[in-house]
Image (spheres, rainbow, N blue to C red):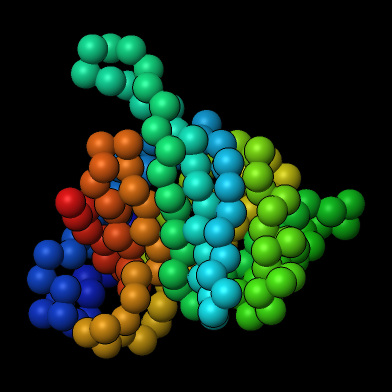
Length: 170
């Protein structure tokens, strides 16, 4: 299946719809460990996870970089595996005090898998028995925020969304 082209490419001239290339960029995430959670007081569902990511240095040795994964999209959900199937642990519409408490369960957990599905570019980040789903923004304007942003060990930022587009910045 191929990725759909963006309906308004002129709004995002540097964005790419190359999903395989994005998946290659995200290969750094599995094995990353959540070390901290930040929820702004006026979050409107936005939050950031500080990740400890292992990467290969140019000298061939492994390095450790602390980088932020920021979820800026307005629609996301954190599920945990329960005895009868998935149970919602937190969601974008929750109040800030509850979000802080519910997202802290991720601290110390390791990312076990990252998937982006077509055609909608839903993003699934698995932390063992917890799964974070980020659903792309459907309506795009010139000042629509990205769905999520990841700062890579190379210090470049992967900016994903809104919708089925991404770009590397920095």
